[in-house]
Length: 147
Image (cartoon, rainbow, N blue to C red):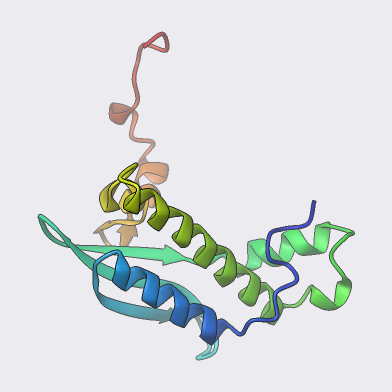
């Protein structure tokens, strides 16, 4: 099955605007777009939410991973397998994910912190997930597999 949203024609700028609106609904007070090596490549969106105190979060977009996935899938037309299109697809997937997370929050099935914890910035600009992955935080994992 081809990657989600591979047929999108929606511009990155429109999707980012929709993402910003969703983040505001989640309580974001500041929103920042992060650019890669050139001024056209937006690699992440960072934001701040007050949850007991001001917490900072970063949602990265892995355009290269999207492009690789599309190239490997024979059902995706070759004319769609470009960096520019991968950026459109990547941000569209993030927008859809964020909408689903907002639905969980609105239904009181989850809180902002439960949803965004992996993306919380903790130290040296790392997200909680990046630090967890790097350090293999065994102290957070249960030793007894039967629990």
